[in-house]
Length: 306
Image 1 (cartoon, helix red, strand yellow):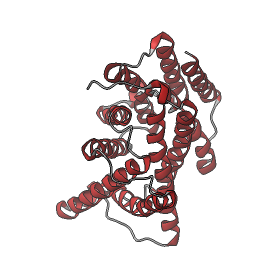
Image 2 (cartoon, helix red, strand yellow):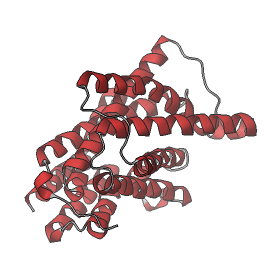
Image 3 (cartoon, helix red, strand yellow):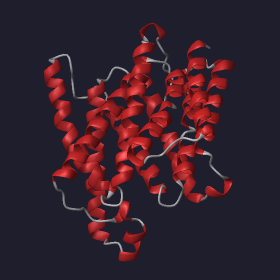
Image 4 (cartoon, helix red, strand yellow):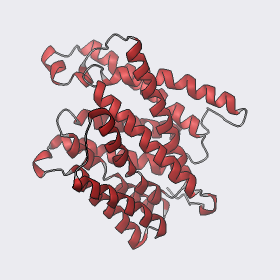
């Protein structure tokens, strides 16, 4: 790849605002999924959430007028980006039954390191010493919040690492190959990928018919679809809203600002996760977690001022 960046076209304030909104929405969506994961298989969530999200995206495009094109200019790159993100979430969720959430999240949040590295390798962004210090400082903040222990890591811990690499590649791809695409088109493509993968996995489960013990061990991936009442549809609506904000926001952020800076603000996910953890599960961060959040905020400021 030999793309070049165009700093004059960047809008750093928009990029930071978009990634903060994205982090807030995704943290909310993950908290909801955590709460309902015992009652819904992942594939049902993928399909129904996106079936709600797609008409909303089309409606937004219609309201915005002729300036919005929901058909990507580069179908190949957009499809590759969507598949990377969809597989990213599958890998991350597949790890959770076998790896403590703190360990999985700690491995996953190595992603700014990968984004910074890939931005330097593929885009030629100048990171600089202070940029690396900012990313490392943010990662230390993540460890302070999550407090992973060496015994927590096993072979399944590689799955969140794969998720991290896939997300990093997808965001770099957003900047160098999908920068001219409409964020709505990128979001629509991602939701189509969710539906295709969800239906394919559902069909595979129907054909393979996993055993009862296997389903009991990992119902989130292997379990059958469940019936839906009004409350469940409301939950799916909230998840659809979260994924629209998250997918559109991520596209805007990485189209509008240098990946090495935007990725540092991705750490804000943990602060929002702490907030939603308190709202949903009455979780309170301890002193070390509070220090970690401050370190993450300091890393973001340092990345902008470097």
